[in-house]
Image 1 (tube, helix red, strand yellow):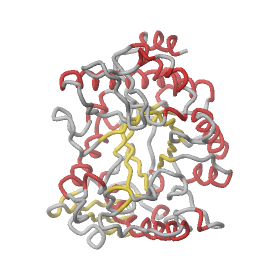
Image 2 (cartoon, rainbow, N blue to C red; image 1 turned 180 degrees about the vertical axis):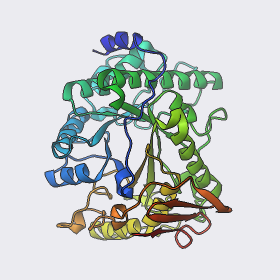
Image 3 (cartoon, one colour; image 1 turned 60 degrees about the horizontal axis):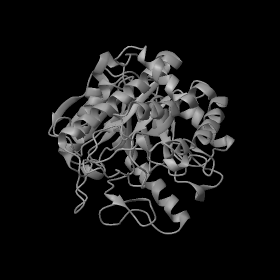
Image 4 (cartoon, helix red, strand yellow; image 1 turned 60 degrees about the vertical axis):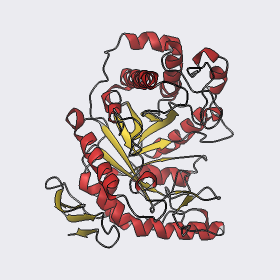
Length: 417
């Protein structure tokens, strides 16, 4: 199939089609909610909650393990769409092949060493899991990569797009700077072909969005990976006020980088006349890394710890504590094509679905965040700067103030209804 798909794609326009398939209203802030998570199969209660509270759901690598990821994603997508067919479901697929061993597609890839990337010395380049990295300059390799989510979407009828992880510029040892640029361009062209495939399959409702916008500044020519939006139908901004934007020695927010994130989101939302999906992720505190338990860590190790019950209770409190700051930051740059995700990390029990009947089994608050159901209304204009790293924005039924100098105490949302 992937060779047939490559032939089909050659007949399509060279540039990704512009459209606005994924957008939200302004009745409440919750109208913009999305999430990217795994790794278990959903029960019906979880699926119903997601269908009723999320506009877009992205299902991660290794979902449903030990089942193949392709099967697990489709099973969860069908459960969600049984409750709400309008909920968009994205298939997680990494340009760097993260989690490939969980996919049935791994068998094909392992049998085609000609798809694998080699450095300038001829050595195989491997990702952090030891999997050979795909060489996007090899046409058959790119066609195979595109075929995996396209086949799932074609055969299942429940996949609306793809979250393309690892879509930005990648640094690899023993590869020249000039060749790294060629590899970046080839990867983006591969993503553009995937986007065209989804448009061919689903029309303007099929979206491939790349992760994404970044403050790691790895490429001096494209430090924030903005090139992604010239090729894909959308982009993800995975980090706000975490990791590269936090001083690991003091936990202090790098205000310049955090402000730059908001500027990148604002820029992305305006591209192609506002027709690109912008998927923004926000988190429950100033993460600087991960603890030995695999959960996020604060600089001084003051994040929730202890038993499973203590972890869930502690992180539930952090989610409630940091929501006003994160929601205010989002609202200052929100547009109909910008979406808001909020959790502790990527497992479904880490804040994506509440568990009122078993509160020691998840970190999501119950009842769900009341701020997300308050009347919001359309914005009355863009954000306005009222000081260094301070912005305000008015909505029909809310006034928002974001202060990066004092994120928790200086930031607030005043609800008028």
